[in-house]
Length: 89
Image (tube, rainbow, N blue to C red):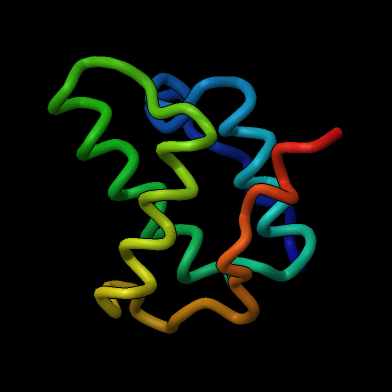
């Protein structure tokens, strides 16, 4: 998989922990490239509307809601319902 560098606008609307989490999802194959793009588009839309960044819990909620609503263009590869495992170091 190619490396994905987040645009400054995307970084603006994700906390540092949430940025790390989405990179981990991509690297571990939990999100494919297309799904990651879909998530980041929604992050920017939500973050700009509320004028604050999403944290890792909000990011996991967003991914879960998008998965349940079938809003991904290509779908998740292996999303785990128990995303809390990603919050542990």
